[in-house]
Image 1 (spheres, rainbow over the protein chains, first blue to last red):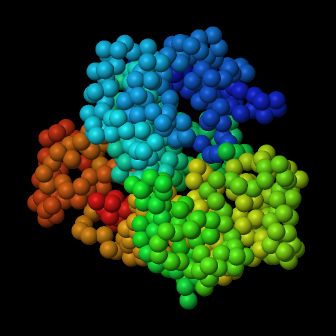
Image 2: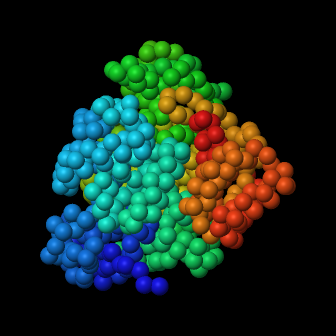
Image 3: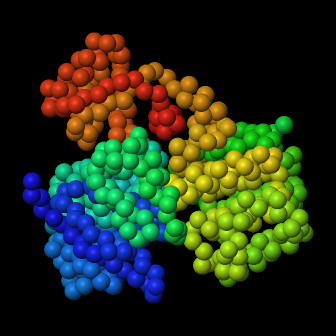
Length: 248
Length: 304
């Protein structure tokens, strides 16, 4: 089975002085895959994501994102990815529609396309009544669903989600994963971090980072088999409890 | 005896549409480890601020260790420890300086209460001369807990101490709480992680400023109505969609490697029909079995 590779890293490394944040990580992510990027606090996830999004330069090693090089083609990377995190979502003092138009505009969507897309998006999310309300007035769960939809408005090849469901109620958390599945079905690769171990089960494959290294990379089922664990929580615990580093 | 008593506590914010705390009543017994479980925006932080006298409620009343949160705020402040959700120590003081500062503010010394914090403090002692701002997340959390304990409070309020913390550190933190409980301190802790509910003696499930249920975790689970089933197949995301379209399925939610479903008709034939229907839709390796609900199942049920 040959699948299209959209993220490819080879011994990707980032050092800060003597500190090796990300230590020779090598992996591939396929088109349309839901790829869970897990690790203990301080394992080096954030540093790796910054490099993959074209926001930081590696110390050595190689990586291409949607075919663009992380050293020389960071603008190409940025145009072909979407990003959302728990912290940065949308402009709270702009309305739902204004946010959609603003971010769509930044990604160069034409007016006509943008109008069609925003109408469809508002309908899909059931936000007809809220379209002209300030985003700040929406409940957190709706904000996060909207932020995700805005992050993939320009149909990027890959979307990076950094703890997208932190603090979200259990029903909305599951609705959020419905959106992830839909995006994946449309061929968008989803690169996601989470502290909820049930969500690790929803990924096609998982990497576990510990102290800057990739300690494991496989499907949730195979990881559970390998570590003789009943749940991903146990797998995580087995792999991460030996960690020497901890940070935010 | 109850150490924390709330009676119809009400708090709204500027925007009158936002009722942060909506006539909430419950009590926490002396020496109890009580959990407030709910998502962001449920009203957990507002409740904590009211109980630690940092916010004045608009309606209702509350007492902490026998003192009124409005009239007797000075007495309460001497008797409670508070660890806010946001790291609130002095970043430019060292670990030891922070601890000394909080001890001094409460007219005591580190030595006088060292036995209470020893377990936790020894883990950060190697870094005692490091500025708090330069500590890792887990270390900051431990220092904040020490500072909240240094005046030997009667009641400890911990607002989302484990949010954003990985599963290993979360487990360690709950071990620390269990040991503190043995010292007779009443602990009120909030968390958005439903799995942590099982580690509390009693919990209140909270959503949109209202209490959905208060009980022991075991009783909340026992109160779950009807039979819950766990189901899986080789195509989990398609299974979710297919199940939702089947009439006999009354609810369906993803739960890790299984989906949890409830059926209108539970009998053997109905179950066989369901499996057959899913086989026809292309699912293989189907497994359907009764399962006991988790706190998250209960929360989802109570939300509706």
